[in-house]
Length: 194
Image 1 (cartoon, one colour):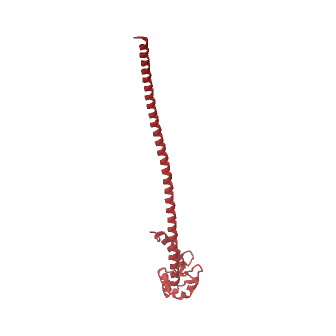
Image 2 (cartoon, rainbow, N blue to C red):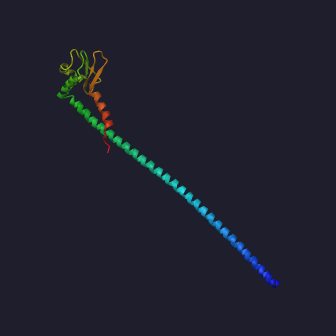
Image 3 (cartoon, rainbow, N blue to C red):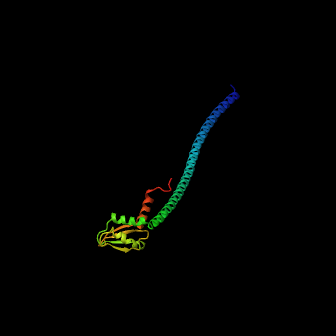
């Protein structure tokens, strides 16, 4: 083999060895690039999922806040409507009670109050000014020695009975019963609710 052939062979060997090294380096670089791309893709997906999750949570919180506000406004409107209906109802009731105190049945009712809650002897029976003329009829149902007096705090009607010693009071006035019934009705009935 002559020197030219040896040189050509040597160059072929060097070229093959260099090609093999280049191919190996290329394959390693390609593998490293694919690995880096996969990692970058995973990071991007994770970041995108995190951002989507945060945006979804923000939208959900905003939606829940709006639902809460609408619910609050609805309940406020409902309670306002309920209060209006209650005031209308009890306004009409007050007018009816006032009208009742102008009838003959009112005197009979007052007498029945005294019969159901008989005052002790020498008790004081308090009436509104308009009811003082009926004290003769009421005296028949009251115990002996009972006195009748005007009480300016009684506006609608009814009577209060003070014991002889002044320590006990039986309040049987419409003025007391009316607001009590109103509070009770408001607490226990679902007027205006659907």
